[in-house]
Image (cartoon, rainbow, N blue to C red):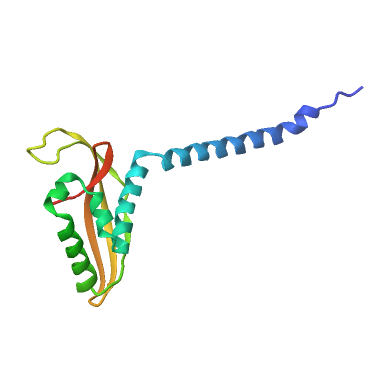
Length: 157
């Protein structure tokens, strides 16, 4: 009497299924980590700031500044200057933008007076304008750091 080889026939299918499931699980873990990483949160924060700017909602974008920036630009002056320069002078209603990946900076110091080092993130925002002066690209380096347990933004000097 011959023995049936039931298991040996199904072994290649089981192996293939295991490999496919392993790849899928690995990809899902990778995607989950990327979506909820600190760098992703920082990029989302910067995108939020520039989406306000894109809509001309400079009041809400100003609120996302670090206190150092708020000292540099009072709210009313900032709202007037941004609208005047970008929309009036360039002759545009809006702009497109792109945010680069976040680069982690350990031991970042705001200035000599505030010498408590902290972790910050450096990104570059690229504005794209179709203006009355032609196509314009502006590259603006930004720093994102926490202040009072909230993300805030600085423009690099």
